[in-house]
Image 1 (cartoon, rainbow, N blue to C red):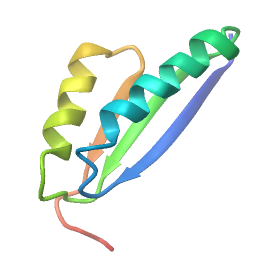
Image 2 (image 1 turned 180 degrees about the horizontal axis):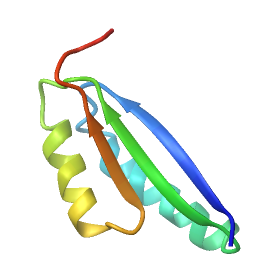
Image 3 (image 1 turned 180 degrees about the vertical axis):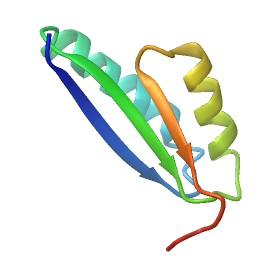
Image 4 (image 1 turned 45 degrees about the vertical axis):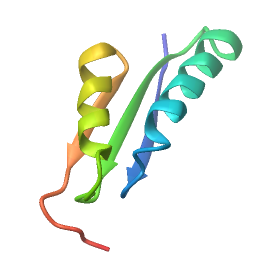
Length: 75
C-alpha cells in the first residue's frame, strides 16, 4: 500500500491543529482508503499550546501523526 505524507508547518496554531488532524483523517478514510498516510506537524517554536496539542495527537494517533519541534523560530 502506498503512503502519503502530509507536512504541516505550525506556529501558534492551537485553534487549528486538532481540527486539521480530524479533517485529514476523515478525508483519507472516506476518500482515499487505498493509501496509508502520515501527518507530520513541524512546529516553529510556538508560544501557545500548539506543541502540547501536537504531542497529544502523537500519543492518540501514533500510526498517523509525527512531529518535529524546532528549538528556535526560524521564520
